[in-house]
Amino acid sequence: MIEKTKDYAVKDIKLAEEGRNLIHWAEDHMPVLMKIREDFEKNKPLKGLTLGCCLHVTKETAVLMRTLKAGGAEVALCGSNPLSTNDAVAAALAEDGIFVYAWRGVNTDEYYWCVDKVLDHQPSITMDDGSDLVTRLHTVRKEGLEYVIAGTEETTTGVNRQKIMAEKGELKYPIIAVNDAMTKHFFDNRYGTGQSTIDGILRATSVLISGKTFVVCGYGWCGKGVSMRARGMGANVIVTEVDPVRALEAVMDGFRVMPIKEAASVGDIFVTVTGNKHVIDEQVI
Ligand SMILES: NC(=O)c1ccc[n+]([C@@H]2O[C@H](COP(=O)([O-])OP(=O)(O)OC[C@H]3O[C@@H](n4cnc5c(N)ncnc54)[C@H](O)[C@@H]3O)[C@@H](O)[C@H]2O)c1
Picture 1 (tube, helix red, strand yellow):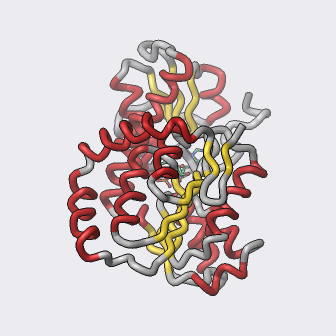
Picture 2 (cartoon, helix red, strand yellow):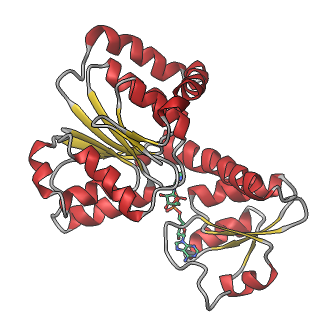
Picture 3 (cartoon, protein in one colour):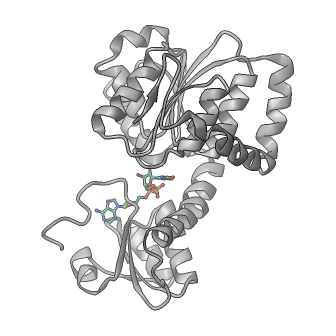
């Protein structure tokens, strides 16, 4: 059962206290954002703005949401991935007066219902992670475009999607590509995704990575991080890559590189970090 009111839709509002503890822990580890919050609380630079956010609903995002609200903005938030929402964090944010429409395990219809709820707030700024909200706004929710001034896009795939829209002259407002910042792709994609991908595999399987043949498809920023961490845990890492220069880079970094068809017959664990579909398809399997 999902708890829906006019202001939020979350799994269970009673999880709020647990969520608040998680958020406070994150706040203790995010000094820059907390410093910005001090200034925002005094000067309210976002007063009068409505922010429509489609992001991973985690304790770290919660620190950002609370900071934006402290700056005077009205903030509406949905998840950017069906499985990354922390239900306790969503409940805590709902109690804090953020308009949250997110729960872990949404199906496709529910996912877009949540995106639409955010767009119902008629955001003046969009904050996207993968371009689902921006794409929705430019297709089935075009009426919302008249309220939007600008936006931000977090991730490689979202930036790629929006660049294509811009090239075709279809992107109707300016969007800052957060992913292009060195501090994003260089650190978050490489070290952050490198670590969290391994963490996800361990939580799901408890498998011993040491000694396994670990196939990483894509040697971009995330692929470099995943390969590095898997090797650090004792895996025998194979990289597959369609870009010859990046494939060569992987060889020079000391990894075995081969086509996915060959890797499929020897790999134990497979991770795709390409932003592409059908990297491992039925034929390969
Ligand atoms: N969930 C998260 O927290 C998170 C964080 C950062 C990035 N991402 C996503 O991860 C993906 C990768 O991001 P990135 O910054 O590493 O991108 P990137 O563009 O730096 O790297 C992608 C690489 O994959 C390669 N590639 C494409 N198709 C391939 C195929 N079929 N087989 C093998 N290689 C292929 C490309 O040549 C490229 O080198 C993107 O979808 C991005 O949005 C997710």
